[in-house]
Image 1 (cartoon, one colour):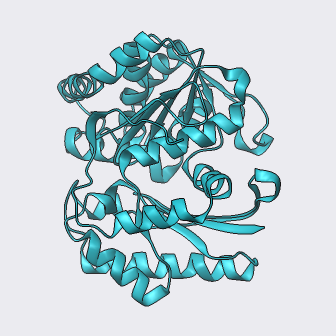
Image 2 (cartoon, rainbow, N blue to C red; image 1 turned 60 degrees about the horizontal axis):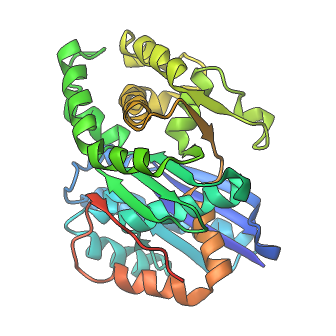
Image 3 (cartoon, rainbow, N blue to C red; image 1 turned 90 degrees about the vertical axis):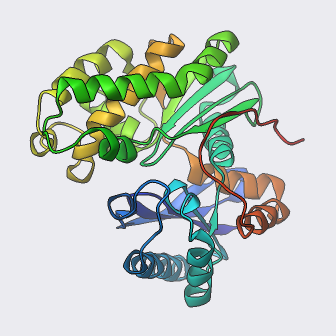
Length: 335
């Protein structure tokens, strides 16, 4: 069975076409397009018309590519930037009307649950009690569990792009005062989640997302060219040293460092602060970098639990209930 998933994030639109025989989503084709919604929309702000047009074109292009690769109906979802926009329902209807793709928004806790599922399937049962961190452009997802789905999941307003806009002004590199203010905010937002993780005592802690992958590469992990099966880790001590180095450089110079891509150079410092603070508050000394995340989680959940689960997600997405990040919400896994 060939399937496709489209992930509308704060920076890019990513397409994965995968063969999902025997419950394992093996990639057949991947593609991404620049969107940069985080640069055009304030946190919780209205998505402007031109940005909606760009989003429509990007989703249409991804759907056409999926069709060329023989994939069936596309599972398309958007994360925090669209989820928290006051005009999100209009955006979803516009995309559906003009592309035929039923784009939905994932609640923050659902995003964390699905990312956890992807990490659990990749890491395997030998990982034991598993904790997860995922830094996006607009939010940080955290989860912990002993089974297939997490025992609790949280979505926090600690995305790398969001914090860069909020705390790093015209100074490049940022001032020490800016850095202190950012650290205080991250500690405040993470306090309850960190206490829960320390109490749970995970055996394995995994990190997903491009932010963590690039930070690990910057701190000495193997490059992506060596493939997904090479073990990659990120230690707290290495990240601390890397954070200090990033803080001393302007964004243009960060882009020349190993693993730091030009589009993410500006937000790499905020991402490092979030990652290091999360590790410090939870007592984690080493993270395992996991290549599977929310896209693989969506495919796995669809294959394992059937289309009724996705139909429920899309139905709830059309409701006008608030869907912003929350400090901590216990999410009980479904049977």
